[in-house]
Image (cartoon, rainbow, N blue to C red):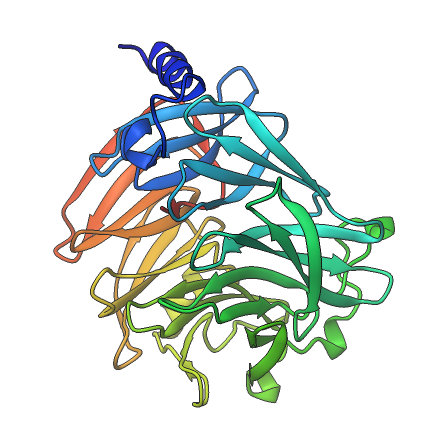
Length: 358
């Protein structure tokens, strides 16, 4: 059965009450979500299975950035590319929009969000651009995604947000860069920017971790979690010279650890990390640089550079098996394993920034 026909069939069963509690298995058991652009210029949200086959493509009204997958329901929140003011909740069985989140006046989204452990709440990173402060929006995912609260993000320019495994503790990548819609993407505070990782429990900032002062122009942007809750982060350098590093890790209660690589390898990243991922076993950390056209892998324990792979316009990355899956703006879905073997699938779309594990 074609995907569209299958979606209509399942939608009919759902409407008739014959699928009492639909799960991700009802849409082909995808393991990843990614936004993409089709050749005709339209935008879609795709579900991708473990064999790197696309299980569904659902239309989006505009270019997407990242998505948040509900932990149990086949439901995804697709975020517009920053500075977006809306996000769309999609029923992945019917392909229909279930709800639309609008950022409050004076705010915009940063393209990322995450669900609570039980799936009842959605958390979104936002910019309060008049105050020059980051906020976390809290939305009731049980009752139409109504906005019920907001919290301080613990810094400026919150971008990525994750929930630590087995808990409702949130970790936020506060990039430290102040922007305002009146000036587009112009960065207003580079000399004074102060990126951090902030941990939030029950709405309160419980801990922040800062970079060394000489690295304060390294904007912390994207996050990944190990099975044990260690945080890996990728950065985007706002200074002039080649940065010391663009990758680090952190555990609550400890200082930040920075990854090390030969200067040439750091230079290959072109001051920009697009995405970061821990391996399934937590032993390695991989990062992508679409500007540098490279994937790099580091040893998570020692922090030492291990290997790299050149790949044009690579950005999305997520763990699978004993390696990683990456996506590119040229349409590739590629597996990368530690022994350099790979499998590639090309389906005729341009993948956007992030590959989100379900």
